[in-house]
Amino acid sequence: MTKPLIGVTTYLDQARWGVWNMPAALLPAQYPRLVQASGGLAAMLPPDEPSAAARVVARLDALVVAGGADVEPVRYGAAPDPRTGPPARARDAWELALVEAALSSGTPLLGICRGMQLLNVALGGTLIQHLDGHVEAVGVIGRHAVKPVPGTRYASLVPELTSVPTYHHQAVDRLGEGLAPSAYAEDGTVEAIELAEPAWALGVQWHPEMGEDLRVMRGLVTAAAGA
Image (cartoon, rainbow, N blue to C red; front, side, top):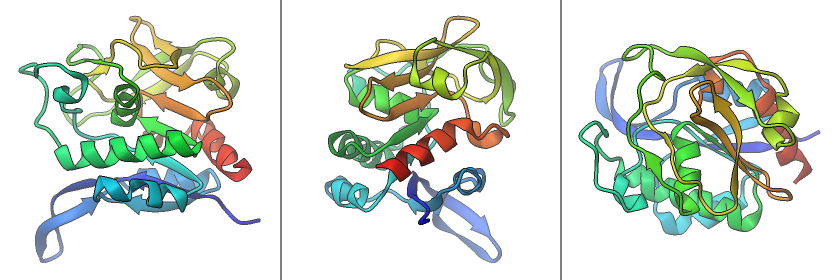
């Protein structure tokens, strides 16, 4: 059986390796490892011209929008908070175009952290630009519990209260059109969002690639195989 091809978006940043120090398309290795462990083939999608997004998505069986920089507040009509990080405009433009192409074509979509926030923004939602308690320390992945909403797609994948790897200081505020919350943190923060069936579009605020639980990614890979 052919494994589904899962595109994963990447950073575009200055990087050093060996004798080199130059711009690079970067993706933590945990992302492709999670795709591979879940039964998919991983393909990196560095920022490109937004006009190419539909053609790229047409070649994929599913799309993962990875974590990274804060979404630029202008994308959801807000002024930047002093604690919002510097913009990654090329990523914003490219990944929003990919999300829109995936939604238009019915391609299964998983947004991780920043990717969940972009899914919300793409559908007209807004973000909380800063909240405390979801980052253990700079550069340290923490953990906290998330509770699924019964009857949702996420709950069908992970039906119980679960401790998840987390590292974020922003979150969903007003939900985008058609989105529903499918998991919450103990403090009430929306931790997962999804579109109603038949679309397969799910966003999680945590970082499944930093843990051992494959169920969310396996759900995406299964949807990709069925599509």
